Each structure stands twice: as structure tokens, then as C-alpha cells.
Amino acid sequence: MKTMISLSNRLMQRYLPDPFLFVVILTFAVFLLGLLFTPSSPLQMVQFWGDGFWALLSFSMQMVLVLVTGHVLASSPFFKKVLSAMASTAKTPGQAIVYVTLVSMAASWINWGFGLVIGALYAKELAKKVEKVDYRLLIASAYSGFVIWHGGFSGSIPLTIATEGHFSENLIGVIPTSETIFAPFNLMIMAALFITLPIVNRLMMPGRDETVSVDPALLEESSYEAAAIEKEAMTPALRLENSRLLSLLIGGLGLVFLISYFISKGFLINLDIVNFLFLFLGILFHGTPKQYLLAVNEAVKGAAGIIIQFPFYAGIMGMMVTSGLAAVISEGFVSISNPQTFPLFAFWSAGIVNIFVPSGGGQWAVQAPVMLDAAKTLDVSMAKTAMAVAWGDAWTNMIQPFWALPALAIAGLKAKDIMGFCVFVLLASGIIISLGLLFL
Image 1 (cartoon, rainbow, N blue to C red):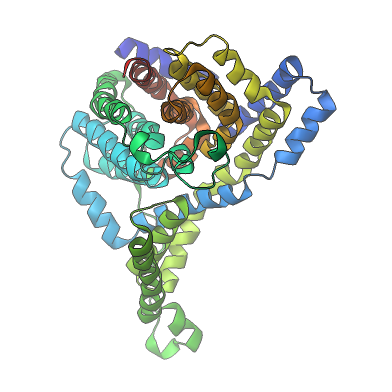
Image 2 (tube, rainbow, N blue to C red; image 1 turned 45 degrees about the vertical axis):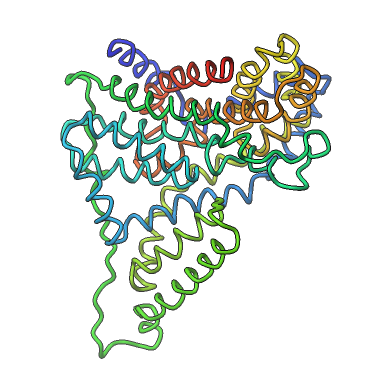
């Protein structure tokens, strides 16, 4: 295992480009594949790319807020104490790897945005407490928990088909989450991953000679404490900026809304609610508007990758969807399927499509017509078909830098630092999910 991990890390360090260059290469790859496998002309492919370029603007802003509000909340004195106390329970590098994997998986099961941020923040605290732990593996382990998100409470595909009025209702009706998220086969896959992934990550610990400790500069606390101001120099504007009462009032208003939301809708968490929760808890925990804004200015520095790369992924999605390339990939797997193997091939095809269309809802819109029609023809469970696509969408995120950007920004690492480890998480999780879909 150590030999394979060492080779994988060296290959990634040498050949994996920066995530921005990765998305540029993907753009040209999809452009050429569209020309080869669809009737689209070069001009049409360019048109599809340009038309889709801004399709993820709303989602991009959500992701920026996930990063910024999560980072700001974690930098508050209260949350630092909580994470520090949790990190203090780990005494050895092996324990640190196992703990961060479990925490990240549990958080991702509740909500994927929550899991991405909490896992990375907890990993940084562990790096401060535990000596001689490999920082790259620690962050990779935090990111590995993300692989289960689509089988959890925030899974966009099972939640979509459980909602009245969804676009495929005329074909499959409304499928409750008892047949998808809480179905026995899904819970057994989830349980197997909760047991296996911490062990896999623990086994990937490199030898002492190859352990990469964290750069102390990445763990230094940013100095952005608000300067003390003499009471005599306080202007009305400065009093507002340093008013604890104002933070309490606006923070309290946010909490009232959240309480009302959970009472009326139950424990239904989406990305907007996560951001709302992080934002207003951050305001409350930082004490004053001035202190909160200083923390925001510090956190925004890590959002550059998300801001510049997400439009390119939207352009790729435009080419994949409008040219019909995504449907061609799906139909290729359907053509070699039978009732027993169909969920497995649906899973694999979704994994391939996800590399180019890293959006659960967007991918379902592309693959649902092909997969559901085939499932009906083969007499395969519609619920299981949907979950096969959902798991495929989550699975190949382990080798897709798109979703790692928030965690990498918090950690101060590059994609090539963790992807050597993530390849083995991809293999292990792929085997477990494939066996579950094939035999359960």
C-alpha cells in the first residue's frame, strides 16, 4: 500500500495540472468528443459552450458563500474552542485520520456543503494538535467523506423525485425517500462506506520518510483583531461598527427565521439554509460588525478558484447537454445492460458524465430521460435507477478538483497534493458501491 501511495502521489505531483488548467483541458476534450460522437459542427459546439457559460452563476455564488461563511464561523472564538476540543481527542496520526474521515462523512451525510467545510476546518485543527501527521492525507481524508453526500439527506436526485411536480413525474410518479435515501440497499452501502473508508485512509499513511507535515504558516492565526478605540474618539459611525447590540439584533433576527423554517418544514437542509445558518452564527459569534467584516475580508481570499473556474464548468456542461454527448455516453452503457447489471452500468455511466457535468441536479436532467426509459423497458426499479445515478454523481468527485476547491482553499493546498490519495478512495468506494448496486 505504501509503495502504491508513493507512486500515486509522485504521478499526481508531476502530471496533474492546476485546477484551472484542468478545466481548460476538459473544455477542449469535450469539444473534440462532441465533434466525434455527435452531429454537432465546430461552430455549434462553440455556441453550446458560450450559451452555457453563465448557467452556474447562482450556484457559484452559493459555493463562494459556503467557503466564506464557513471560514468566518470557524475563525470565531467560540467555534475555535469547539473544533480545538474535538481535535484534542486524537492522540496519534492514525486516530487523526480516522476521526476526520468519520466527522466529514457524518457532516456530508447531513448536508454536502456542511461536510465540505467542516471536514477541512476540523482537519486544520487536528494538524495543530497531532504531531507527525501527514497534512496532505489529513485533508484528503476530510474530502473523502464527500463521496457519500448523494446518498444522504441533501441528495439532490432523491429529493427531486420525492417532490411533486418534478420533470419526470409523468414517467415515474413521486418516489418517497423511504425507497431511495432510506432504502435498505442504500443504507447498507452507506454503512459499508462508513466502516471501510476510515480504514482505507488509515492504511494510506505514508512512511516516516515520506510524511509531509503541515507548513506552520498555513496554521498561523490571521491577525485581524479590531483595533481598540478610545471612547472619546468614538463617532456615531464607529459606535455602530463596534456595537455588540447591533450584531445581537441582526443575528437574532436570522435565528428567528431559522427556527420558523425548521418548525414549518422539518429538518430539510439545503445549501441556502446552510449558508444562512453559517452567516448569522458568524455574526453572533464575532461579537461586533467590525470584527465580523474583518473576518470576511480574510476569508474571501480563498474564493478565487471558485469564482474563475465555475463558469468554465458551466460551459462544459452546456456542450455536454446541448450536443447530446451526455446522452450518447448513457445510451452506450444502456445498450450493453440487462435487468441485473443495469444499476451497475447506470452507476458507471453517471460517474463518467460527472467528470464533465459536476452538478447533481444538472446531471439528472441530462441522464434521467435515457436511464428511466431504459429502466422501464428492462423492468428495473425506478428508485434504484435514480440512486445508481446519484451514487455515480458522487463517486467520481474523488478525482474531480471542482468540488475540492473549498476544502483546498481552507487548507492552503493544491489539488495535486491530495489527489494521489483520493484515487484509492475512488477505487475502494467504487468497488463497494458497485457490489451493493449489483447484489443488494
